[in-house]
Length: 446
Ligand code: NAD
Image 1 (cartoon, rainbow, N blue to C red):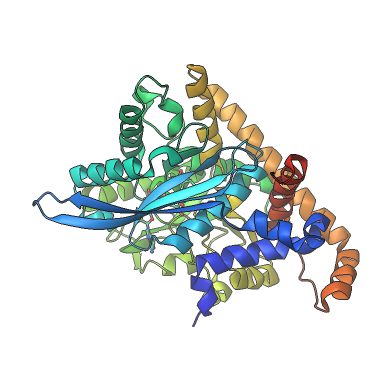
Image 2: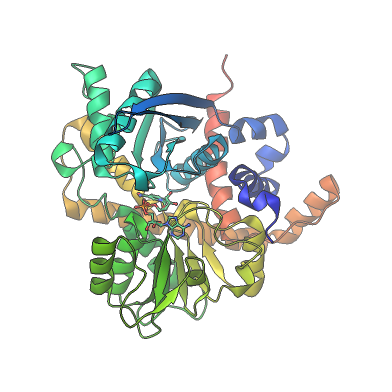
């Protein structure tokens, strides 16, 4: 049984934030400032009447949460998924703030979503939901205030509709920078489709190179399991394979496929494209969608949804490194279990930041009416991922070095014991620290 707070994304986001507070003097001294940094600036809920293809009207709920614009305009994806609600979108927006700060791009955090089952929607229905959602959001999004992007069950086509709807509502303006992840013919940037997975690869390779996981120096020859076979997971499987790893398991909502000798990814792609699932691959063992997390492997890439590695299964995870391509896949209790076992978790705000980094390059090129060379995209993405990975690893080492001092101070002020910092807490110290400094420099208005 998992603890009730583990399935509550908002409670998970709170716990992750609270775990970095003992290491940030500026937050310890000012609980009010900490609350301001943590709570979302603005929560928007909209009701969307949409005509189905059969003429029926169905009413959907949509959300956009602008968590923080302390360091720049809000930035974050739009998802179409049944579980979308205010708490989930708020947690995801919060993670976007820390992610943009960690990789040092001048954005705050935001997220949006529509509660719906995308498997039941035709493309025309999806288009009508998108247009109505963007129309309802009205002036709350914009190139200088809040810039959406793709997420679960939305893609470059969805972003083209977002752009078109916004452009129709703002004639005569350059509307291209209002959304990223657009098609290449519509102001998009080369490499955005694969950027999340590519960033995860750069972070993992560099993490191993700089000694993040003693005993593992390079990807070549390592076994990798991937949960989720969509934009993040499918591209990660291919890129990690091209980098020399063996992909032993993949999965989607319906189940998974496992072969300790390595899967033929071309066969997986063909099966997924023709049947809609990776389940039923010739010669592979069938798994249910959670079993993929527990197969023997060196690296596990959760690339589906939140709350997958929990107190219920963390002790059965065999991977030595978990690379969080998904947002929020590991709960704080599971973090502690993995940490105690010696498994390293490259946290979501680092591992999947490639998508928002390349989105940032797209936004800049749209503002400047230019195009970016694909080679430049990769060079700049790699540099940013490497730098952030180094900062997280170095920060964790520094926190551990000074742990006794932090622990004594914490004990004196709260009477409780301080837990040892893991990579996620180190990443939060860097990210929240940057937001804190920006808030202090701006000052409180008025
Ligand atoms: P997607 O819609 O392209 O793919 C999602 C995949 O996850 C599908 O294969 C689906 O079958 C699978 N899935 C869904 N629920 C599942 C479950 N319960 N068990 C197993 N598999 C399940 O979405 P995506 O864009 O790849 O996003 C996946 C994750 O990556 C999300 O957490 C998202 O927030 C995160 N992410 C995406 C991007 C991006 O640029 N697309 C950027 C950063 C983070």
